[in-house]
Structures are given as C-alpha cells and as structure tokens.
Image (cartoon, rainbow, N blue to C red):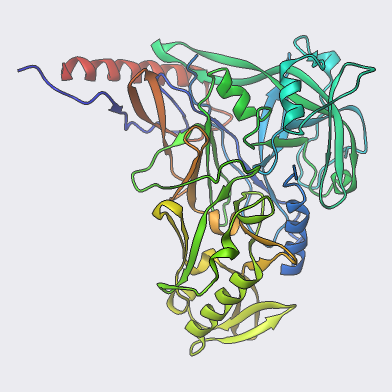
Length: 493
C-alpha cells in the first residue's frame, strides 16, 4: 500500500538567530519598544493624557519568505514609549524608524525641507529624511494614478488641480497634524524563496512624504521618522503588498510584557493551536470587535447590552498604540465595583489622583480575580490581574497597584491597548475579517502559515535574527533545510 500523508508539512527545526520560510509569504519586521531616559517616569494621569493624544490619531474618517530582525527596548507602562520598526526605502535604500499604528492607514516619513519636523529624538535613535531626488527609483504620484483615486475615497489623499500632485493632510484630535505629497518607491526586505533561491527583495509602494508637522508631532521627546499605518484601507502597506501578492492580507504581533520588552511584528499569520478568533465588525474604519459581555471572577457583570453596540464612535476597538485600556462609563463602574467586592477583605482600597488603587502586602495573583472580555463567536480574552493592574511606587511597606482601565469622557468606547495585549499573539486576518489571540511567551520563536502552492499549507518556524547574522550562514542553513525537507518527502513517499 502506498504511504498516505497529509497535504501539509510542519517544519519544526529552530534555527538560532535566523528566520526562514520555505515557499511562503510572511514577512517580519524589527519591532522595538522604545524608551527615553529613565527619569521620564509618568503618573497614571499623564499616561491617560498620552493615550488621549493617541486616540486623536484614530482618524475620523509571487511568494516571498519571512524577514526577521532583533527586538530591543523595554516595555514599561510608566515610561513614555512606542512600538516602532525599521524600514528601508528608496535606491540606494535608506533606513527609517516608523511607529506601528493600527489606527491609521498610510505609511509616511518626514521629507527633506520639512517644516516642523524634529531633527533629533529623545528615543536616542537617528532621524532621517526622505529625499525623492536622491532615490533613482522614486517618482511622484499624480492625481490620475488609480491609487490616488482610491485614497480619495477613503479620505487618505487629496488632489490639487493646479499641480496634479496626489497629496494628503492628516489632522489629529490633539491639534497636531502633518501634510505632504505621495511618492512611489521601493520597500526593501531580505527574503528566502522556494527552490533555495535567496536574496534581497523589493516591492514598489506608495507612501507619504511629509513637508509639514504641527502640534505634538514637532516635539523631539518621542520623535520617530514617521508612522507606519496598518489600517484596512487600500493605501495601507499591508493592502498594497497583498494586492501585489507579496504578502497575505494579514499581519500579527506579539508584545513582550516583561522588563526586557520588545516583540515581533509579522506580515503574515502567526499560527498557534489554541488561537481563538472573533469576527471584525464590518464597514468600520478601525479594528472594531463585537464585545458581548465582561466577567469578573466568573460572574457576568450586569451591563446593558447597548453599552457595547457598535458605531463609528461607539463599541470596542483593538489598538496596540494605546498604553492603558478604556471602558464606557457604565462598564467601567460595574468593573470597578466587581473588583472591589472581590478583594475587599484582603486589600486597602485608596484613590490616587482619581485612580482606583490598592495597598497590598501579598501577591496580586493570590488576591485579585481573573476578568474576561467575551466577544462574538465565543472568543474570550482572559485577563489575569497583571493584565488590568499597574504597579506604582510603594507606600510604607505596602505595594501600590492601580486599575489600568480608565474612561474617555463623553465617549462610549472600549479601547483595549497594550496593557491587555501584552504576552499574547494577536493576528489581524483581513482576508477572513477576523482577529485572533492566544497567550504566548513573546520571547520565543513563532510558527507562521505559508502557502507553497494551491491547496497546500506549511507551518514554519521563524524567530528574530540579529543584525550581525551572516547572510552566508543564512543561505547555508536554508540549503540544509531544503535538503532535509526534500529528503523527508522522499521517505514519506
């Protein structure tokens, strides 16, 4: 009898300091949690203000292998930080550090002669400016370009009849803004292709060249080169690359919650057996989810269902750019009451600057209950105490822990930010219009789904690589893996 085997293969070889894909799409980028000097510690009220400014950025309106990069920086909700990755744009390629932003669509970087663009950064990273005239592959995007027309429909671009140049103006809720024009140029990334073909790959993308910054964007304290929009509209890089069949229409991230910080960002789908998924709410500008209920200690809270109903400025949003997390007033009050009732015999509750805090002499895991956010499709986001509490400076001999959830005055929004997303894989599957998550050690390698040919799916292991990794060593490793893979197929046959 002929041997029978499944039409997919699991490759479990873990390569130290390497990220390899056999015949697949995903790409991973260097993701950093950056911090300024250690003296820049914040009170909760300042974190709330930072998130308020962040929420202003939720604007109202052929197979390629993976790329792996090291992750540095430290995650700490009491230090001003942001997640950013390093991209290479133009010819010759030049590096740009850009903030990861799931609340907007467009990739833009500061351009030469920019008015108001910071020249230095408190994040201790170099700032670069894109110069279209210095790139041999750069070209301006005209109003007649189909991509510009698509951007106009999504309010991501505008056109001036006099110049015929596709441009943009983004105004944020805190009064800051940026404006500029669109260029088309090459995005560079290292690849590993099927058939042991290896080398550097490029894809032509349209991105913004900012000529004016106003408001907070002029501040050098947290300055980066630009913003990497990961929204769903046509001008987002993930949409552009997937339309060229360079990557799938999906991306994933895993944010480390310990003192080392960092994480991984993958243009593709990270795969884990216990992943749970919930549908995206259709026709929404952001990553809106259908939140059905909240439980504390296994008990569903008494919250009117209308609190969670979804509209443009109403409902639940997943946003990795928000530090804390936010609930509508009715949900917040019910949540705080449930926590207080559960711990009243073990802690001393106090109010600090309007924040609900607790004086604790024991481990929070022994005192506080778990919470659960329950979504459509039966998916629940389980929160351990460290996922909704933030430690502050001790008082006397007692530790001080404060609730990391706040409210947005006058808004019925639930925004789930970094506090609840850390130490979990999150997958944004735009093709199937769903978001998934699972608890995970984000310092570990991840499995990525790739498609080698129609009807066949492979799961391969990928992990960040160091900048010092030798290309020759990578190619040698790839050749060895290909040899092992083909040998395994022969033996199975």
